[in-house]
Image (cartoon, rainbow, N blue to C red):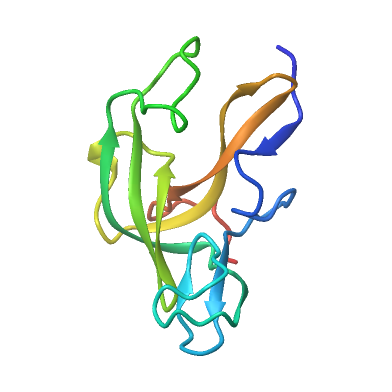
Length: 150
């Protein structure tokens, strides 16, 4: 199997390349509202004095579901690639915002509202000479030593 260079599904969503990627949001200088993805104006006060803001890499699962059918373009896989159900949910980044994200876990028995989650990246599909990747959140299970504290 050939290893292809990776590239983000969309530039500016998360830091890349990075050993520990972070989501790129924006913060309003006027009202302190933090949003993701980054915006050029504040959706809360309509202020235009916003700046890039890197979001926390850990949060809690606020709500979730399992995506059991192929999403329609442009969000879905190319038709020729095999589809597997995946988790999708909102992750609460304490003191910042809630982020809609793909989840690395698709077994509903292993997901629970309020569980700790950590940002990662996952491959989506191959696009010519690249493997497209996106951000996702993975559960941090009690007793799991594979997730070092950040």
